[in-house]
Image 1 (cartoon, rainbow, N blue to C red):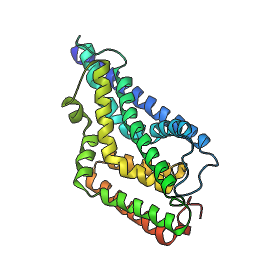
Image 2: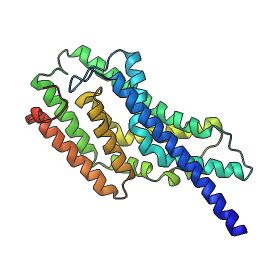
Image 3: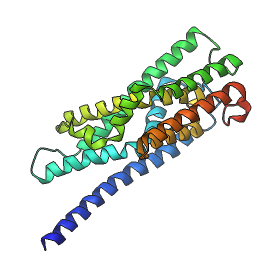
Image 4: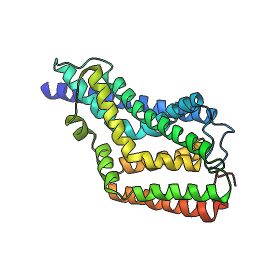
Length: 261
């Protein structure tokens, strides 16, 4: 009897976690659809104008959900598992903590997006034509993408990627409870994720931040290196892929889809 009860409990917990993953994936799928609608007709190739701040911010948050929710799901599930265990054992774990944790994660990436937007618009104003379709803009894009490939091989990338790939270890060493604690932990995880993936997102700006196709490519890179069991292979494969894209953008742009050549 006790064994049957234990099995039922495990099954029930698994269903909750599966439901949480399903919610994240559904939100990601809806975000992909919304992104496609928002960006329809806007993709003009590399260095696509991100538009007014309000439009960019709304598009950026939706884009984050589309690109990041699948790869952040293990971390969210780990956090939900710990808080649910505390709740079942009568300890402090208020409802809604998981949603606040996810909100903190999105806030960190939103701050990065605003900083990238401010830098992009400032440089465009100071150096008109720098992000044009002329060869100069093409070589700049190739250089940014190649720099993202190089970052893949740095110690900073390795450390931050490890934080993202070990959700239970990350949370157990930093867990905080209550809404403020959940927000702080989400912000911290988001900051590590930014440290891990900022170069990939900058490469997306170079390729065309309003391109759903390149969003999908970069999102796939992020998911591969965070979720595949072979960390080194995934990381190196993404670096090689970025290097090849940079070479093609610089020297044979006509062979790179979606660059508006």
